[in-house]
Amino acid sequence: MELTHTEHRMKSLTEQDVCPLRYIVIEEKKEVWFVGSFPSSMAVPTLVNRHFLGYKGCLATEEHWLKLKERYDPEC
Image (tube, rainbow, N blue to C red; front, side):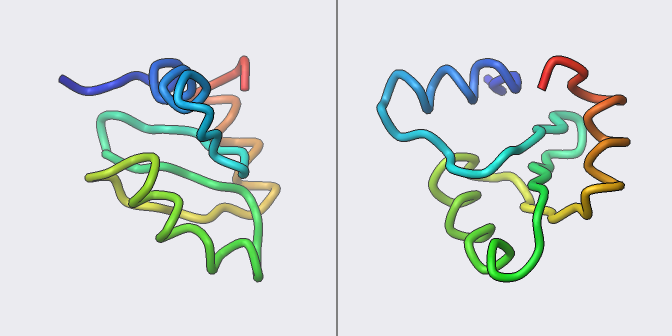
């Protein structure tokens, strides 16, 4: 069973293991998008393996992040 963006977030919160970067989960593509650049980019593989097993980690510029947020998670 796949978890939704909110369920991912709730899972992290209930386990007291919160993902430290802003993210958007795109379920149909199995992608997790983070906003940032170096050195944040170095943490993406670890965060994905820890919080979003089976998903691909992607890094967005601030401009691309705003487009993703508008399209996939306007409440984020």
